[in-house]
Amino acid sequence: MQKSKRLIELMMLINKKQHFTARELAEECGVSLRTIQRDLVDLEELGVPLYTEFGPKGGYRLLKEKLLPPLTFTENEAIAMFFAYESLQNYTSVPFGKEATSALTKFYSVLPPNTKRKIDELKHRILFWVPMREQDVPFLYLILEAAVERKVITIRYDSAKGEGDRDILPIGLYSHNGYWYCPAYCFNKQAYRLFRADNIRSLQLREELEPAMKEKIGKSMTLEEWFLPPTPQHTVPLRVELTRLGVRKCQADPWLDKAITLRDDGSGFINSKIEKREIAYYADFVFGLGTDAFVEEPSEMADLIVDKLESLQSRYQL
Image 1 (cartoon, rainbow, N blue to C red):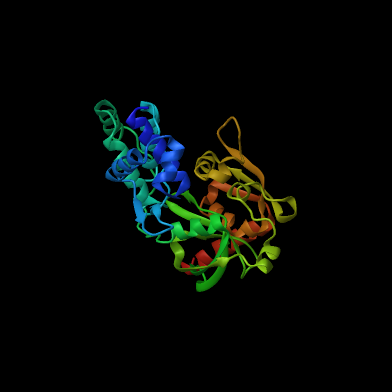
Image 2 (image 1 turned 120 degrees about the vertical axis):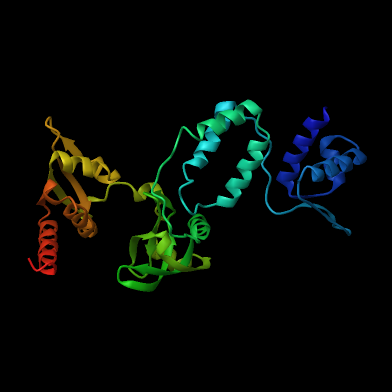
């Protein structure tokens, strides 16, 4: 067997074992003890983090984290890897940001010159634009870890009503319009709520979910389920007439865009359902459309818009 192939197989084997002796590896690989010892030295020189333990139960241990086996990529696959990461470059914070930069630097260094030139040129031809936000988001990794491990976190959250402590179980993270959002079960409200990650002022990771908390929540929601249409018992009908300009403004919203029915003249209407707790949110949005939108139902939304208009008139003493 060629040495390069043997080293690749050896790397995969020790990645699986994590803790081993040279003699164990020699027996499994069918080579001499001296050959395995030389191979381990070669792997260490290549950057594989091995630690030697002495004593009766000694041997080798793989440090830090698991290593992935070597992979091969086509040129287009290599380019796709770069641009998957490039799509997040306008975010000031991303989960695994340093690790992603480190991995792509290693990856780029071994690419053929022609592929490097193509990637360098494409960087000036494709832009995944999102608004550049100045807010720092220091807790993305901890939020994601809590979602994966199903751990409750205590956060200090700065909401419209001021700062306060919340115990939440994160579902996950998603990005939209330059911001990171965290849907989570809020134990204070005993319901699922949406938190903007940059408004989290502090975070403390707690232990695994306690049995009483598990019983209260039931089956944990997934991020895919969060985006499903709301259940009928918690919804109200939404009917909004839109001018041509109103249609274009609503098309910028990823949720409303799907609910628009267009007419031949370019105007349209929204005939959908929304959750009751979102009436105030959509009232703010439709209020911003001015005369390019008219709410037919729900009546509560129309009343909120009228209240906002009267408050605005009063402020300007009209």
